[in-house]
Length: 233
Length: 233
DNA sequence: CCATTTCCTTGACTTATATCAAGAGCCGGT
DNA sequence: ACCGGCTCTTGATATAAGTCAAGGAAATGG
Image 1: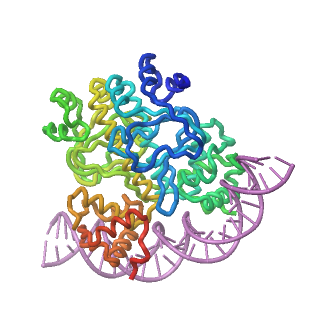
Image 2 (image 1 turned 30 degrees about the vertical axis):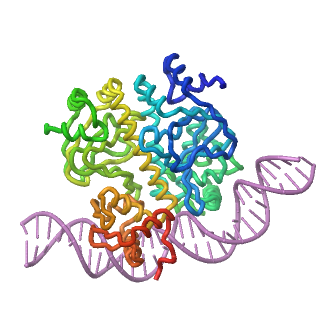
């Protein structure tokens, strides 16, 4: 097994833990390699442990009967996913699939729960992980229910801008099709709205690079939830 | 302070705890009474503790700038809410308001975190609470993104049917306006869709009582996400 | 480099549901 | 019982965004 010590000791779930705890965590971790597009688990599958992506990218999503996809989360290196059945119920509530070739660490439920009872720090870190996830869901529900697609896009670009520490330009790390699924729309609409925002001078689009032309305008759009008619030419 | 011992020892967060733990929990709890329609906290307010409703009903919701409401959750007696800032970030991510006159118990953040570090059972129970909340959010996002309003209604009635242990009839415990906000629509649409489902022989509506006429049809509708054209007269 | 596949964009058209308005019905207080 | 205020229903209309189709652009593999 590759040495995942550094990754785990820096991860949100296990950071700042003493060495003997990291050792205990490593001893229960099971490595799984997955190629791109590989299904990790399905909605309704029994869940007897959770995962951390060590490398790569994983999407967790729901599918409608006619094939429409809603991506709930995208998880990169160091981020845990699939924890819900460890603590509540028996089954995974959604599907998980690799977006890129990935190395995964699997933590069996019982072994992990044992670790939690011995280490309040791990418990508190896991509580932080789940609480942060709840925050993200709150934003997602607000987007889907109360905001139009351009406002969702604006909010996403502002979030990317903060993560990438750049108020001039952001780069999409996922495809536009996946971004559409994440924001609750379809690629056609995404394309049209990007063009509309571009025509209104808010952004410039060059492939996966988005130049944030009118930063304040994007803040207004994200807050108000809809494109301002005043912005039309 | 009223004796909340029984309520707490039966709550999902504190059930099956030894007596001395319940005593410790009671010692940090602060009672707050709230009349109907009273704001408990606002989106963005600093959160330095969480609540449990001892009696009454509380809605947690987001508001759009033009006043549209999306209810995220409804919390009744024994259910915790407002925990997110205890574990992640500083501010509440949504608003909370009483729907009925309510008695609330407030648990200060620091005191509660101290309790958690001493009692793995409380930590695990809180993890179960948050994990269950994540399940509910997954359903909500799926509803908003992938299902039409009648399918959301069908899913809601089936859930109520299970809670109320009655496959013949369910009774709404919230107003139709609030149900609309919870399902991500407006009262006009809710009214129209109830009528449509009624015309198709799926349900019969009498005020807040909904007779589930075609239970299997409701299951199909909830699963498929849309009203079947075959159901039309 | 080239052929193939996949992704993205654009056009035409449809649809679920929101907006605005007003009347009917329900509920609680006096 | 009556009345006022609030909720719900219904009608007319508009709108954001989805469906279907096809071509252009980009990515991938040999």
